[in-house]
Image (cartoon, rainbow, N blue to C red; front, top):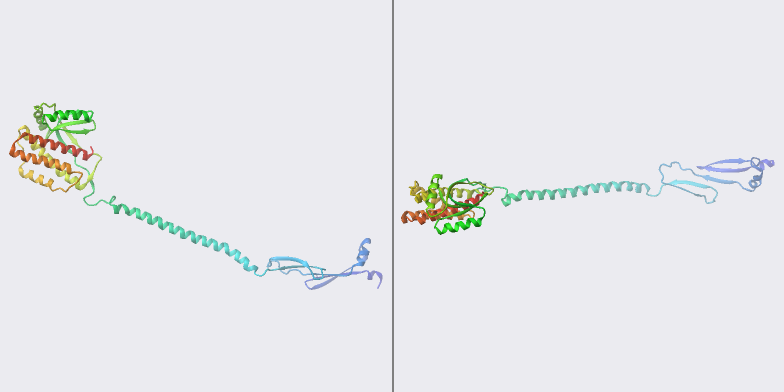
Length: 324
C-alpha cells in the first residue's frame, strides 16, 4: 500500500443503526492541516434520529458514554397525555360549575322576589283597604237645600261671634257657618224661600237685623262609608219635617205634617246605630223633635226657638261633614 493510501483516514457515522464510512485523503486537506489530520485516529459517531416528532413532548441532547457522538432523542414524559387531558378538561368543568351555580342563585333570587311581590299583592285584601266590604264602601252625601234667615256676613269669626252674643241676649238662636267668602250668622230655618222671608220678619220683631237666603250645602272633598251616608239621609228627611213644622208654628201658619209621619221618621233616626261621624247630628235633630213634641202641649214659643237652634246646629254639622 502506497503512502497515499496509508494516509487515508476513515470516518464512520451511524444513522439509525446503519453505519456509513467516509474516507478523506490527506491530499484533499490543505497543507497546514495535513499534520493535524495524521495525528487523529478514526472517530465514530452515532446519530439516532427520532421517527415521529409529532407525538413527543421533549427533545433532549447529550453525549454517548464514550463522549464521541451526539445523541438526539425525543421522548414522552410519563403521564404526559394524562396531564394535557386534565389541563384541557379542568377549564370546561369550571365553566359548567359556574353556569350551574349562577342558575341556582338566579332561581333562588327570583323565587324570593316573586314571594315578596305576592305578599304585597295580597296585603291590601287582608287589611281591607283595597277591597270594599259590604256596607263600608264610600258614598257621596246628598245635596241639602236650606232656606235660612241670615243675621250678617263677616270677614272674621271673631266679628261673627260678637254679633252672635248680642242676638243671644234677645233669646234668638244662631249658628255661625264658615263658607268660602266669609263667616255667616244664621238665625232661623224654614222650608221655602217665602217662608224664610216671613220668619225673618218675625225675628226682626226681636230687634235683629235680618235677611232671607237660600243656601245649598253640596258634597265637598270629604266622603263617608255607605252606612253613615244612609243614616244621614234619614236625618235630613226628619230635618225637613221639623224645619217646616217649627217655622210655621212661629209665623202662625198651620203645619202640614201629621203625627204619624212625624213618629215614623223620628223612630227611624232613633234606631240608627251609633256612629262617631254622625252621632252629634243625630242628637241635634232628635232634640229638635223632642222640643216640638213638648210644644204641642205647652205652646211656649221659647221651645220653638230652641228647636230652631238645634236644627241650625244640625245644618252646621252637616256642612262640616260634607266638606263644602
